[in-house]
Image (cartoon, rainbow, N blue to C red; front, side):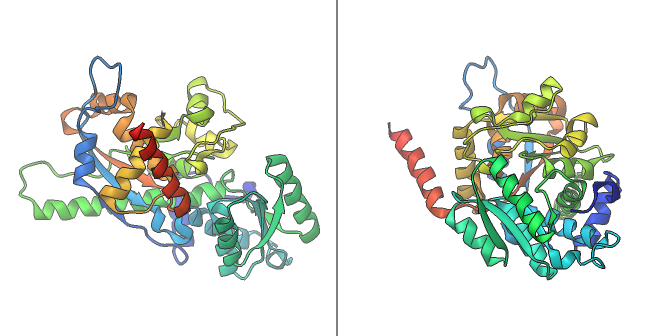
Length: 383
């Protein structure tokens, strides 16, 4: 990874520069809407219990579909930006850095993203994966040309094997989220999202009688938060625009570390959870935390239960006809089911309501696991 001291400043302008750098390598992913889900989000939540009055916010939902990104997730943006920045590091190419390659430890989307970015540039990639990783993920990572090196399942074991690879090959470490270059790359989706919604609203204005005032774009964006690289990048992309940014997490087994840290003022450094939103099982990194909390570029965090995530996932499949992974369904679950968030929107937005952007972070899910997830849900409903 490029030395963080050589990275551009963490600003919206740097996100704009990152977009130009990775433009040849990534997709501009689509933004879609759903009148039925917007209507559902704007009605009182029938599932909320113990509330004297259920919130009735006015929400118009917009979905940024990073499940259609290369490797099926937003991670491609950060990986390509990291490689492009590394190529610009003084002496790295001339000193044989490209021949020595890059390395990371990941069993998820970052593994495939870095593998693709490295292969595209003719650079070897070493991916340290736990032996218990799902076979389809191992196969997909190898399919992108990576050298897969197996390790134990704990972070200590993974890091030890990674260090051994670095010692043997001289490969440069590219972390999944805790680095400025990764954050800036992920933030490019936020720029696209803002511009695409403005363009879509302009089309609507042309096709509708001018009985209401023109819409100006998104009022807020809510995104999933694991390590925080994407959320902090999106927050940078919105800095100075007036668009609020919120984080969303599962609550299961303490997976809501960012929420707890944000509310206490102390970053939670370890997380141990088996939430179905497996992309969100990591604690927030130091670099993302500096943006999210220390600079207060994220306005708040909200969490949802496993059942609420599954319900939102089912609605996305049934209403939007898109394949997303459980982590992607978390912000939609917040918009639909979290009474604190919904009451906040009702209070802050008033009669005008909000145009709320929801980030679908990826769509990499094993179909067998998905089938079991919904089969289990149906069985529980029968009981």
